[in-house]
Length: 560
Image (cartoon, rainbow, N blue to C red; front, side, top):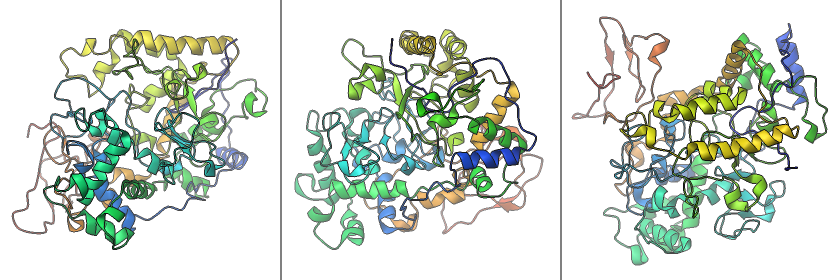
């Protein structure tokens, strides 16, 4: 008998053992109050975390580094190229485009490689609230605490064998994670820069480039970085303070400052019973109404409609029980991880720990702000939360539809590619292999990915609840501006990423005009915020700091 594992990663898991509908209590507030207490929720995910403010000097240094293309081998890619605040802390793509971009400054749909090929096999995870992850980072959890309950035992990374502590990992998961995009050819290193050199040599060279010393001296036409580092780490020589360890510390501090947890759900948990709509409350009840699964010592109820909180639990909505990686059989699109003889396949966690039990398993992520962090799944195969819920409801039917009809061709990144239908010919083979294991687990009695048996309204309620986990700041340009470099903060190397969209205009936060166009009339136009304008006459104003400032005005479709 195959070892049974409970499964869940992006959203929901579990299911109905029969077709009974879940009865919604008449007094939802009272029922939710009891469930909130049962699950020990406080509405304060940042309790116990020491998070810096966005104005912290180290955070500001990290922000400038995060947006500098100088940390990539060919000086064409910044961390923000795949993790931009205006794109939900990701890149808005199913499959990231790091190096070999046609236009390094284009982000989101329209960012393409010069070859037309895809090189990065997995979707970019959001940096929003990445600090909540106490166990591991990366979709295959390849940067992880050896024992997350005893972090002093160290962090394991791909620089050392699985199960060993990396002495150079740094003092946090985020710092350890920041060591690897710069040594990954398809992400930031490039395919020719220091080809074949050890990881530590590449990192040391990049630090010397930023610090303007050693063999990398003079690689940047303009270099003011030493003074920026001195303001944070002390007035010492560049060799002493512009180190790769300090670079990762600053990058980690920048990400740790992204505390976007002031959402309607947390306000409800803290006592504001009007913070949620009735639909959101019903969705919360569906999400929370679950005795512990049998593996946690609980007993099976007569029906088990969902098991969302089994794998996205506590106030952080991240995994804190059992294993942190799960098999879901999301469509297997993308170039694969390049294993000899099986190049187009991605076997997930197994690549790191070589355990067959973890084949096709991927890390559970937080659901905080999940509304803005799509596309979803390890390869970004679903664009909407509704699609993800349907996958959990009947994964075989959804997979058949997606694969038979080349569902990736409906996605913005791929839809305009001439040979779109032929992009991923091995999708069915690899996806079916993961689905077959889940089928066997279900046959063995595991409560994994059984049909939800929820009504259309109940599915909508679940989605609405998950949208109530969105901090309004992540949808407001003016609020997010603090996490983007500002002109007065400087540009130490002249390589700062000034992102633009496929239309060639500066990247802005989109607005959903389908909800009813809202006229911008007689009010200030928000900076970098997409606005819906309707009606016959409009006027608005913007403030400019100086003469000869360029203003961009563009219609939504780029035709005006």
